[in-house]
Length: 186
Image (cartoon, rainbow, N blue to C red; front, side, top):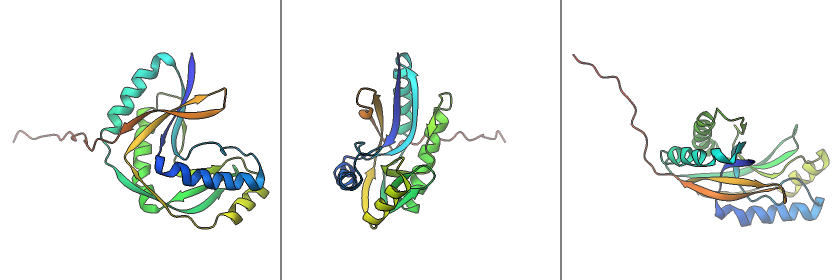
């Protein structure tokens, strides 16, 4: 049986403050896409047969072992007008740390049909109407959140409740793979 998964940056430290933001927006515009989703920064999403699950987890574990923990700062609100997404953006320094990890994971799973995210952000709402985007941007003007990025998380989609739920975490091991260097005999 096929299941849908997502690989994300996730921190329990962000769940409650972001939930408060989402709940406040919901009190103003009613239900919207992503209003019940826990805070995360998406790396990719894919659908696989259950038989492939263990090899995907092994690959995630191996990749995560090579990454070093680092702080991530989220310091501004922004929107993707074309998709109706309202989000919290990361600093340039954080982006410079997150994007290489995202690219490595995309590359490692290029054999899958991935929905990739190339621009790290933390969604507050998706598929908002232009008027709801305007309301969100008026409600939320300043933000300053931080977390220690020290793992990637695997989430599974539950079609009954139409939400992703964390099922496993892969800690950063700070063990970079040695680069192969061509030696010389002379």
